[in-house]
Image 1 (cartoon, rainbow, N blue to C red):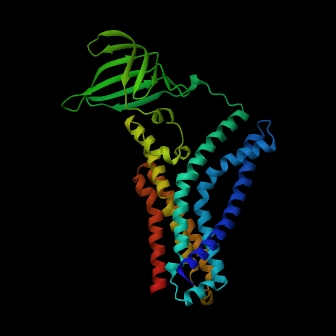
Image 2 (image 1 turned 90 degrees about the vertical axis):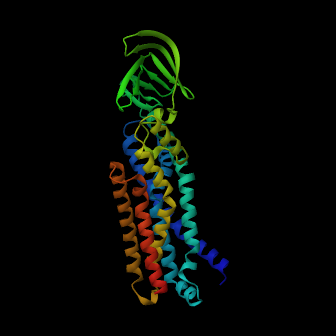
Length: 365
């Protein structure tokens, strides 16, 4: 069996196993979420089955994204266990084919699917989730009271000090701060901040690189008052940091996260949750690879040696342990105990190394 033929055959078998796992998991997701939408929306609004199904399908990509590591784990287990049961792995190994060559196609597929999940499925899920929330709010007649919005606080570093921006409310649609106050501080040689002046205004609209301030009044530390009227003030605050600050990190698309992190840091806002999400998406290929290696370690034992089914079950349990450890580390990263990079990469990296060690010891002795 030539290398290309073997890779093509393993790719087909792996895709078949993943297809079965995806069909089962996807069906469960749709059914469970349809029941949830019927309970949460159907009992509070006059909606039909088609509307509930539309809500479910809009939410499905985001839900599927979170379950794809399990799809890969059980899909790989299914594919490799089936090959083992049919003694095809025996034939391959008897032909002088190493475990590493057998795993070429599954590993390539895992890494490729991980990249596609982070760069394609994640943005699609985030976009459809916005439509889902808008549709759900429309069905449930949700009304937002602008007077009930929380105050806005920003802190922007400048060359001579920093600026604190406080506002009573935020108009997301027009990118406007309502009743803002700009507190401009300087820092002396002793690193002590000193309030230089304060600008109060009726509103401030965020433009490209500056604030367009309406009805500004200035008070300086020396007690001088000035009616400035309409003025502009340069800023490094980005639209995403200000007008998407309330979005969950899971609702931000992969391609938007770097800009949002930088914008949040410029505005003095906490960016740790977004950094954690960013590293989590970057680690998706490694997570899929870890799931694939766990499945391989659990199923490459030849059927004639016995215990193949028990090893496959142990592989599934090992996958759940990895995902549990990953969630634990993410919680620690959210609390600031460890860095976002360590929280996102540690579990799949450690699991991959352990699985590779086991496969190597089994293959090479």
